[in-house]
Length: 184
Image (tube, rainbow, N blue to C red; front, side, top):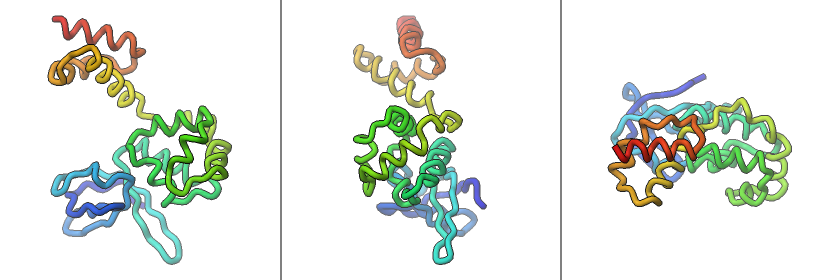
């Protein structure tokens, strides 16, 4: 079983990448292959799916994505090829919120996810994702950047202060802290 592979991205296709590690090219199916850059080194967390007629690698940028994927494929009627596009945005928070809030409409937007499967996802996973590492810091980081942009600050100024703000604070306090740093 593989945990992750670090290597150079040598090929990007519509549903997979090829990652070169020690002169071996690993074909890895990923949710959003275009989030990787050609000829750059990448760390890809892996899930190896083995069946009698198949040995496939599925890749993820973060452990949170991989954990969410593992939970999704445990849902009755939801396989690897249906679960992978659900993680294409790279933001597990939106998916987690949709499941917790029973947002069937949001879940049905994904390819091959109909009403029955969407309801099964909610039934099987609602309330059970609390121990899945949800990337809250990335979610609040993006939210903070948007708030500061809305206030008219330049992207360069925003980037200089956002990393100094405690991501565990509520968004209101993050904005106050960022504004103090911007006004110095």
